[in-house]
Length: 117
Image 1 (cartoon, helix red, strand yellow):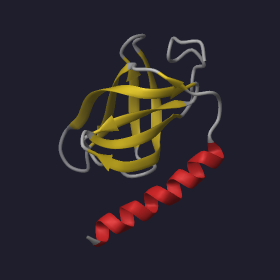
Image 2 (cartoon, helix red, strand yellow):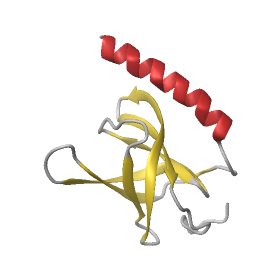
Image 3 (cartoon, one colour):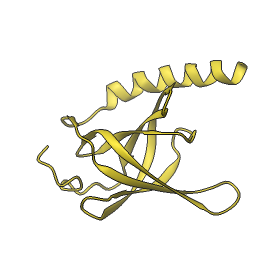
């Protein structure tokens, strides 16, 4: 229970910071992506998902896995086969299909999504 309260507080604080730091226009768009990261123990984790929202600097995705803020990962746009280093900058509340995450591209190519944003 204490862990859930802590995560909820962190999520609200992160959401406030995220709103203040948001850059660029956003577009609802379902883009197939692969996220990869090193597990604390064991092999590298690779998960395929779809974005819900994209902008030139990142995206929002929903994953079953629980990741911490500032977790580093690799994000691949499966439609364009472009890859970029990324970091978790926002963690929403748990949903039936997983956690919502705001993912920021570390060194974004303005055409990463292959969309006009």
